[in-house]
Image (cartoon, rainbow, N blue to C red; front, side, top):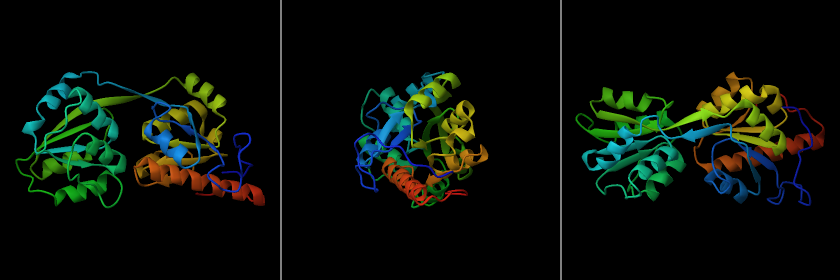
Length: 278
């Protein structure tokens, strides 16, 4: 990343205080009052919506609908994202999860979504990421014969499902949603208008769509933060250096963006380059 003077909204203070309203491009698909945007505002940052992807219903909604009506027949609900939980609850018309259903989630945001849905004693990993949750799940139950529902994105990874099947569980994977790249011209137009100081990227699909539309060089002067190591790895293979927020929660991610921006501003003020990994 090349050092430069970071832009701020007019009339706000510099010096690293929460009043320094750095503009942060939110590349996930969410409304202006979405969870990530709220977390950024709480961190003293100004979110600017610039979605690289859109979230769509599954091509065939019937499997999710059937699973939502049969939750009492499952022993476990395991979710990799808050969106998967939201899609499942929408299919249930908001009816709370069965009290006896055990639940596990990847990351703080997913755990919060499960809690809002009525889940109790939610299992999460001590370390961030699906691999860490998989390790905790191995010791969480005697798996042969257990019925597990795993709602996921169409493009989601099958690692947890494969691991539990190897342990003898009966895992039903259902597509809860799919993520589709927006047209490159739309991304580029909104990016130009955003005049962002930073970008936060929450998924590999968003990373791919963003770089395809803008090119890696368009991001080299910004503070770029990836949510999760998988997304960070995808950005780096696309030629974009980034900070990584290993926790999938939006509050830690917002704090990571703020730290990256303040570090960039400090380097710019000192006149030093900021090459290399951040």
